[in-house]
Amino acid sequence: MTSQRSQAVLIIGGRGEFGRFLQRDILPSLGAEIILTLERDTPRDHHAARLRQARHIVLSTSLAGYAERACELVEQCCELPQATTLWLISSVQAGVWRAVAPMLAGGANPHLAAVFVHPMYGPNGFRAKEREAETFRNILTATLDGVEHRVAEEVAEISLAFQSKLGIATTADFDPEEHDEATACSQGLSYCVAQVMFAHPEIDRLVKEQLPDLHHSFHANRNLINDFLRLNGYMPEVTAVFAELWKQTSQSSYGDLLQAFSEADAMLHQRVESPIPTKWYERLRAAAVLA
Image 1: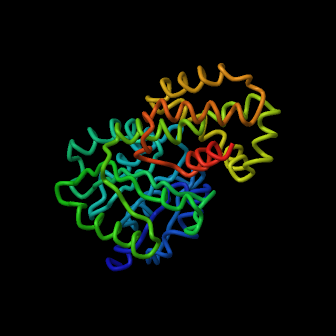
Image 2: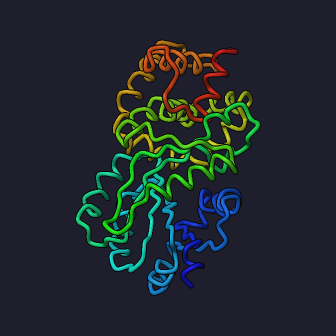
């Protein structure tokens, strides 16, 4: 039982898009033999047993309410008697960190630790040969050790496995606030383009003709995009910059959209590369160069 538990991964939100992606494309490649899931409709009396079975618990739920669900998860794990690592993978990290850190710092469960990480890959694009593949990396923003459970060694081992088996590097160059600021100016800037698409059917049609995969992804993830724009504390500045530059165009063509994006990108990054590029941000930068 102990050896089985040492390899068991529990995904909370396993039926979601990212949860399915983890089960299909990521965890088997990393050698996970036992994959468990919990869903919103899983009876509460099943939760405790599955939490006790898991050595690693991945919270893969919607961005809206993520911090609250992470806090609830910490409470649910308070009495686990063996080393357990929570993997908190929200695309907006600072709010989750601020919510969870005080709970774990209190030392209620010395066997519980947490890793805060944003994987910059996903079910809408995990193809190692595509030109944006260099953006596929894990952004490790923070770790919180338990008194009896230090995670540095296992995080290093898992990072090495991602690199050797999937070609995905892990960087620890950003804390949660730095992560959110950088992704607001890349991921968030691309979502400003999505906002224009959602509001202007003719522009939306033109983007669909020119960038069909981006168009599909933005529409498939409309709720996530809106939540990111709302929850990332650095978005108001980015949104304001883009909106002002968009207003300076005729607001009628695909070229206008790329112009506003490109000029906002240059202004936000002072004409240097983004420290955390993302797939659709890179796709829009490439399209702007060709426009």
